[in-house]
Length: 300
Image (cartoon, rainbow, N blue to C red; front, side):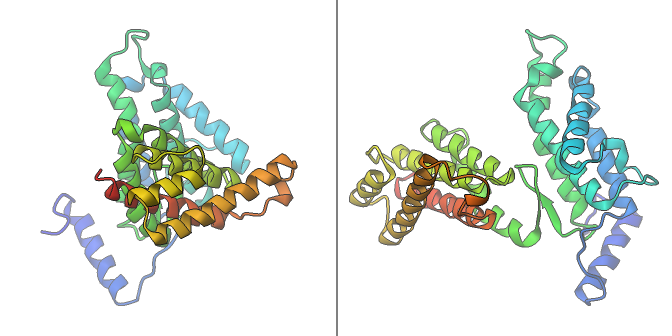
């Protein structure tokens, strides 16, 4: 039975929505309906109610309040997701991003949630570390059946489904490839930095970090050299890079040289920046695809 884990009313709602969507009588939306809001509030509560968060819950709420006030000029907190409030839809979507950011921040500073620090309970530390992904999965599992045309990414950003396809095909496999493999540790860090800069709307920095990830991936695959150009030549000779790959890495290298020249001249930021957010988005994803190709050629 489809959606058999759900109760009768929810199974029926999903069935009706699916039929109406297929018939063109319903369209995807960016709006959170009341039921979605209730479920998203419960998702946050379920993830953070464990005793592992006892000492850190106030810090999480403070992070969310500061983040939302500083970014959207409205202070919201997890309870804002409950129906009946005056918080607008775009602010609630911002809350989802801020909640995931807060969990990621705590995962990077897990001692804040440990009542036994500096002798932390390892089981509780694992719960804190796993919380961002647990919340992300829960949020996306709610957004989809409520026909919300957004998905929450690992970088704490809600993106339209059209962008999510590229993310699923490139970013997630790249991070999965890199995660836990010692030889790709430097490449993973640089690629994560590129995603972070992309999230923060710093296209030049995102491109620079993406190029760094590519360099580190080439080194991990056995290529040698002190620059991307030298690593490209080494990659060609070793069969790690194909001719088409080399043309793409050449463009990346030229882009990096332009950014370096602008920075040396003090012109690489603000209105003088050449590259747009969309340019960086494209290049970061191309680099992710290239890293996958390189790993295949190197025999993983």
